[in-house]
Length: 306
Image (cartoon, rainbow, N blue to C red; front, side, top):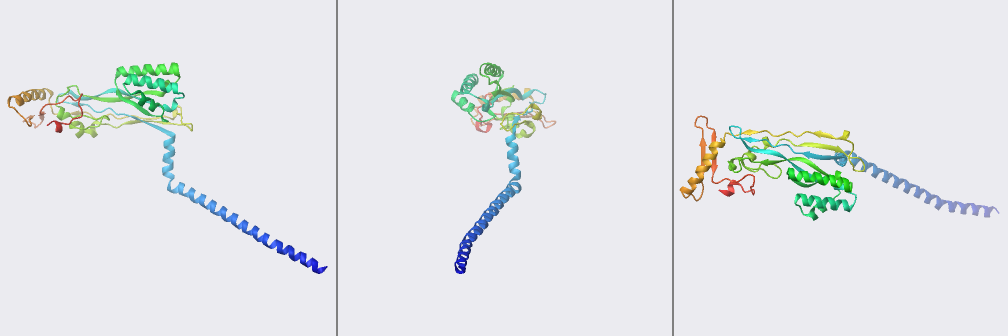
């Protein structure tokens, strides 16, 4: 009987031995997995906080804010007597927030109206209405007549399709040259973004261009604009004006007689005329062959023309 009891005890111990070791190994493995998992999570958190913290904060701010640029008015260029040679006049740019469209009917109505008013391709405009964006430029530098028609379209979209808030008109500026081709190679011209590309416009671009402003609007978690108290405006600073020593009357006379001189003397290559005040050294006129209308320029520079 004692032998049988000892056998049963030994068999129980033998059975408990492997099970206990298996449980211990399992517990150790689970602890090891937890340690590695928590360690990796802590390491990742530390990396995101310390290494990528600043960039992630910038991305978060970018998702929470909508930044719209306000163009600055470019400075005026005058002749020696205060006559305007180049100035910026108010125009408008048409923008929209297509993310606010709810139905395809709204998109089609907006695309049809804008393409007709602005002379744009319908398919291109419609494609813009499908973008998931709060700010899409439809066309820049539209004049008063087109602006009034866009305002009428906004009212129509609001009344019939309940989406008048999608299209907006923002202030913009367009460069004009009242004297057309007078002193064109001296004055130069600007590009589509009002940056100086030639002549005085290019040489003194940093003085004339000014500093653009900004409208910063907060967005909530759903991506819609917050109330106006969360909006911050940074006013644009207009550019500086410049007075040239060029005299519009003297310049005009020099251009007139140089054109005739080119014909009379059968000039084939190049002709240049400079008029200077001998008492002060001020340049009163500077002419290089025929000028070109700065308001209708095909972006051909004076260098190409001479």
